[in-house]
Each structure stands twice: as structure tokens, then as C-alpha cells.
Length: 350
Image (cartoon, rainbow, N blue to C red; front, side, top):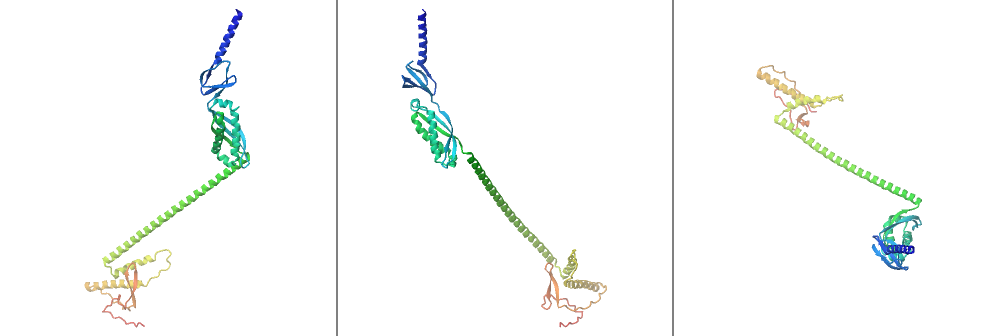
């Protein structure tokens, strides 16, 4: 019984192992390569698959999802003989598990080496400044070369990104100084433009203020002149409406004379020649009033005045604003009064 039992136990174990090897469960987004006696037979897709135990062998399982592989920094020489370290990141996806298994021994290593050689070819034809500012161009060039080369390997390169570009330390210091100088230059230009614009605006404001001030002064002068003209016109009309004679004008002239002497700076007062004529007219007015009063009312008769020689020229105030002007007696513009009752002494003009 014991040998039979041992045989049964061995058969059960073998059957269990064969069952395990017969049923293959492949997860989603994965594939498996099946070989029969070392030769490729088929590719197992996701799900439950049945294989022949001890005859079919699953070689490897391949992930069909997009993979991200970062590569270490690689030294690359630019066109201007500067060494820069470039980090790259590759995004790829296996599209053909059979080609990825049999066409290349290690597609990860192959992609890395192909990336390095392609990157050196592209960077070698560019200077440092173009390398730093042309990442999109470099990415497109790398992706085109890698996609073409890895297509027969059953791999599709979706994206290639330059993770970092590190120039030498001395070059970095020079670039920082250049950048700082450029920024200082732009700041100085912007400051100068701001000051220039501020001065222009200030000058325009002052110009407009001067124009408005001049217009205001002109309007004020016009209004002041109009007011003075209206005042003179009113005074002139009032004088003519009141029918002022020479006596009233002489009286007003005498009242105005003290105003001429006012002021602390007036040390010497020169009496003009018109004062005598004004006194004469005013004296004649008072003499006429006294004579009329004595004859009509029976009052005292004024003493006869001393006859005076007629002046060669007298001054008759015509306009209070214009002042008195000399009048030629011989031309008849204005003649002094002549009393027929008085006797005048003839004066030889010579």
C-alpha cells in the first residue's frame, strides 16, 4: 500500500503543477511571449490563457503602458567648444512585444545610447546661446531620430524632454554678469524714458498754465479798460448833462491841487501856471456875485478892481481829464472878458 500511496501523491503533485503551468493569467496592459521548445509561438494578451505545460514556456512579460526613463547627465560639446551637461527624459511605449523581445537585446540601454549620440550630433552644430534657447528644436530633433530608429524594435517614442542644461561654472558666472548688465541697462533706459516723459508733461502743463494765465490777464485788462472807459464816459456825460461852466471847473481844479502835494516823497511842490488862470476865473465869479448883490439889493458896492493887462495867451480848461490847454487869444479860440466900464492900459507888445 505504501508504494501505491506514494505514486498517487506524486501524480497529484504533478497534475497540480501541470494545471498551474497550463493556466496563465495576464494582467491588463501587459503581454507575454510564449516559446515552444525555444521557438516563438505566440503572444499572450490580457486575460486567461491556456498553454501546454512542460512544452510551452512563457519567456517574459512586457508592460504595454507608457514608460518614463530619466537618463543621467551626459557631457556634450557645443559648436563653440564648451562642455555642457544635459539631462534627458524619454517617454516611450512598447507597441510590439515580439519585436521588443527579439529585435534588440535591451531596448532601454539601446534607447539611452541612441539618445546620447543623437544629442551630441544636434548640440555639436549649435553654440551655447542657441542650445539654451532652442530646447523645442532639440526635443523635436531627438524625437524624430529616436522614433525612426526604435520603430523596428516595436517601441514608440512619444516625447523627449531636456531636463537640465548645465554649462560650466565660469560660463554661468559670465552669463549672470551679462544678464545683470542687460537688466541694469534696461532699467536705466526705462528710468530715462520716464524722466523724459515727466519733463515733457511738466513742460506741457506749464505751457498750458502760461497760456491760460495770459488769456486771463488779457480778459482782465479788457474788462478793466471797459470799466475805465465806462467810468470816463459816465463822468463825461454827467459833466455835459450838468452844463458845467468854467467857474465850476476852476473850483474843481483848485480842490484837486492839494491831492498833488500828498505823499512822503513830495519835498518840493511846483505850482503850475494854470493856478493863476483858475484864481482869476474864480475871483471874477465872486466879483460878479458881489456886484449883482449890491446893485439889486442895495447893498455895499464892491471896490473897483485894478485893471490888469491882458495876457498874450491864457489857458482854458476844456476837459477835466485832458487838463487845460493853451488857447491863442488872437485866433479867437477863447477871449477874456472885457468890462466896458473899465479903462485898460495899453501894453506895447514889444
